[in-house]
Length: 314
Ligand code: 10E
Ligand code: SF4
Image (spheres, rainbow, N blue to C red):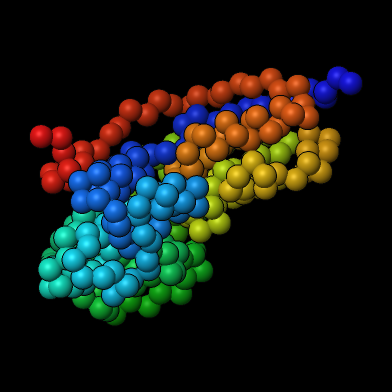
């Protein structure tokens, strides 16, 4: 029996960003250097496949530093940590490696500088996300206010409206953030903006790549975890283009009835999802469809980040 035809538009860029690549490498090199177990505080990146692979190599994942036994090395996840975390690791004499993405660290330093300059920071981000917790933990309590939505921005009643600055989480929706920032600049014209947008290159490139194909597709599949902020944003971007979208972690999550009536399927992956999972999904699709793959490239990425000094090759 002949298989039905399916055109598969694969967004590029997609998948691993430079910060994720670096963070995973840090855990692998730490295991090579110190031997197993190496503890990791929080999922190194929000992807179960990545975490399970590292577990198999000898990594142990915990949520809090007090779950790390004395005398074993610990890695901090790519999302960043509040200042108290490295401080208490040092106090306990723990060997630690910081896998915080350099682009998140950059926001941390900006937060410190702005507070030192006497500014109150409006921080655009999602409550409870580890990156938000980490960034709030760079500055004294009360010096930063979380803003999640346009409605939050409209409702703000700052004590000193002429002394504000704003910063953002790195993985936000480009469009939603522009709307929130629009409210800031209208209501608080003297607000200090970051030199460059804090939404990182990988987040904005992946959203733009989805925008380029979504309208041509009847369904968009995004490979990523439900706790992966940047991946969830990709689903939203497709939906706003009017295309239904599903977030899946692995090929086995695909439900065949989603594809009823679909002749052009879009596919992308969040910044923490390995390319192997994209290939796994294409292979599963090919068991039922005659798949014609086309990669749609909106931009090329070649950024890489240096490893921490202690792990660089001698
Ligand atoms: O939930 P997020 O998108 O922040 O994290 P992730 O682990 O899915 O992807 C990597 C992004 C990081 C580390 C935040 N800048
Ligand atoms: Fe860094 Fe951006 Fe990747 Fe986050 S999504 S790890 S900020 S490059």
